[in-house]
Length: 267
Image (tube, rainbow, N blue to C red; front, side):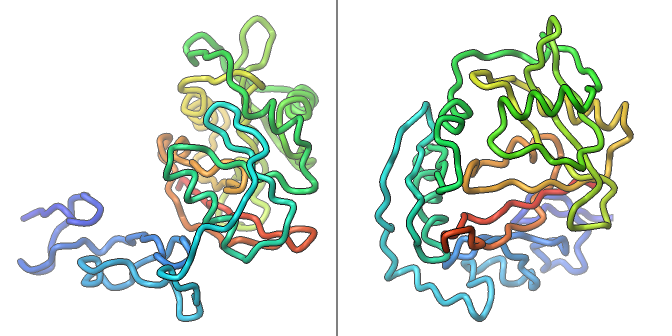
C-alpha cells in the first residue's frame, strides 16, 4: 500500500492513481472577494488560486479600498473600533482582516455594547499557568455570577453545566455548555469560554476541554465565535476542534453589520 502526502493539507492519503496530488478530504479555502471560508469541491482546483465563494459574491477586490474607521482605544494588542455607523455588509470584516494581518485583535464597539466592560475584557495584566489551577464542576449560580462580572454578553439561561479553573476558592476561567441551539446533530454546544478580567491562563482552554471529555462525557460538540469581538479562534483549533465554516456578516440593530461568526466543531 502506497501513501502520499496531500500537497494542500499535508495529510497522508492513499492515492487512486499515481497522478493524484491532493487527497479527497474537504479542503477549506478563503474567498479572495469577501473573506468567507468555502469548501473546494474539485481537488484539481487546489493547484489554482482561490475563487469566489459563490456566483453572487459581487465584491471586486481590485477596486476595494480600506473603509474609514475610528479607533476608540488600544488595550494591549486589542484595537477598539467605533462601529456605531452603518457600513457595507463586508466592510467591518475587511477592517478586522486588515488589523488582524498586522497582528492586532480588532474589537468592534456597537451601540449596544458597554465600552467600559469591553476595555476591562481586553486588559491583560497578569498571566497564570493552568497547572497552578484545579478544575471544578461549578454550581450554575457561581458560573452566572462570574460571567456577569467578566463576560461581555449576557448569561445564557439554558446553560446546563459549567467547569472552572479555581485556586483558593477564586475562579479564573470557565467553560459552559448547553444543548445545541441551532444544530441538533451535536450533543453539546460550548456556550462561553471566559477568563477573569485582567488575566491570561496558559493552557486553560485545553485543560477545561479535557476535563469536559473526561468527567462530563462531552465529545461531540459545536461552538460559535463572534468575529466582531475576537478574530482569532486558533485556541479552539489547538484543542482539536475543526473550523466547519464561517457565517457571513449579519445585520444588527441600527442596520450595522457584524463580522460574521466562526463555527467550529469536535466529533
